[in-house]
Length: 144
Image (tube, rainbow, N blue to C red; front, side):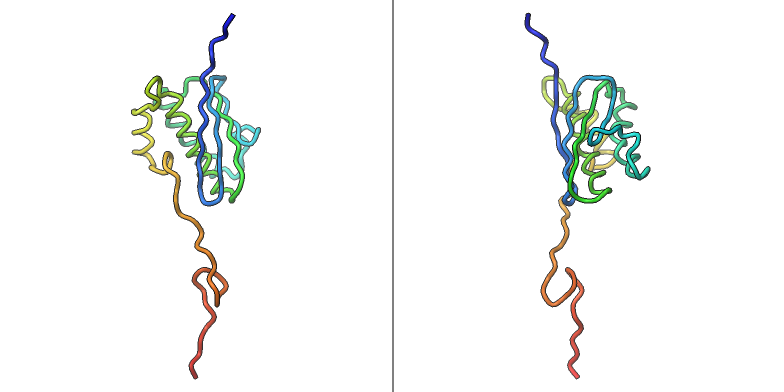
């Protein structure tokens, strides 16, 4: 007896040095970050920001009982949060896409809300240069 293959979508998001990988599959509507429910994620601002793509998808009735498991590492709290929201949004767009692979209506709504939901932020830290303590600060020169 052949079992029906369950649809699973893997997606990723990046911000600075933080990387988040999300797995979207049919389930009970759970969202977990590093094996813990997203409801206990701290600080509260980070939790709200990470839940934005889920709230938009629920408002459009595109959150059809899916479980989202996210594993994240690197960077700081807000870098990881931005990577998480990108991974969730990309995963939901591809999961709800059907045969062609992309849910155009949900994708357009995400782009209208915030482009960084679907596009990684390319900005990186500028490296330190010689003669100074950081990328811009330099030792003072005196000509007297």
